[in-house]
Image (cartoon, rainbow, N blue to C red; front, side, top):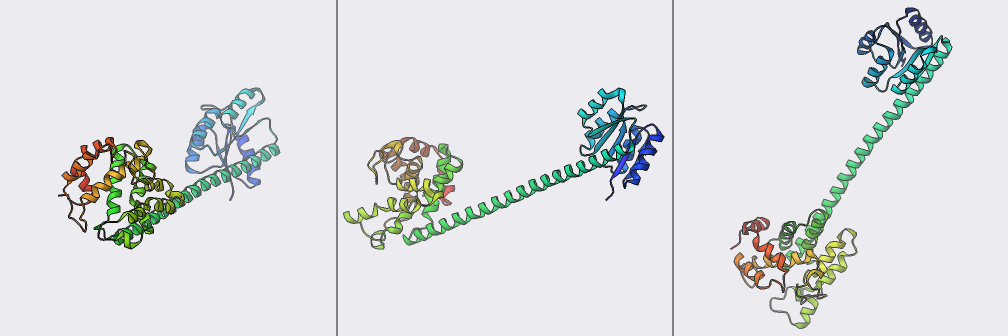
Length: 348
């Protein structure tokens, strides 16, 4: 494709001379006798390079350069100046002129300079287009990676939820105990001030809290009557079994810590490590309370669901022994209907 060159000079002879030489060299040339004419022409015809005299009646070549670079920074500009006006020529370079030639000039020098500027412009545009294309590709790939990661995360979550539902079904839970506890824990965790990734970890820990029961035999897990001492020893291993399963999975290491300590008690009488107070992870302290909420407000084989008032009395009774006092106080300050919204059901 032939490049278009605009020659701006108030001397017709110079315009014709440059136009004839450059046309012979394969360029398409246009002429303007002043700056205003030049801008009218460029509004109608895209131009690749402008050759402009600096000193012209009316608006000068400096003004042409300044306004032109604001409109089209990618256009090449070659200034023509007299030997006595080199300071202005240097000012033009600072304003964005690509080069300048002095009068009197040799036509071969002009043609060579024009060729160099056109080549530089082509390379600059190619680089710019490549950068734009590269940025677009990076954005596109980043979006695709984010989409893939979201899909993978959803697949993980769906798999975990399906596994937990299977565990709940094994214990003949009414509804989904683990999902309700997860909702409660996320809600209360937000009230405590937990957010972002930490809240997500708490949710996963609450959802998977009983994963260790995979390792408990049906004879113990589903026993209709009370467990004997040996059976309780086995049952109390499930936090460690759950921890052993999940701690080997990178994205479940923090939920594994919550699972390990979800049967600890605030006064140190829990298991398996008999942790005390704030030695217990905050997620486990939150879980201990909301697990009690769900256990008491759900039907069990040996009893019907209890009213919410019984839960409030229970957590108040064991405030400071089983439960973190600060979390109990926060729990009791939250209206009952908020917990019902989390559960998706009405309490008695």
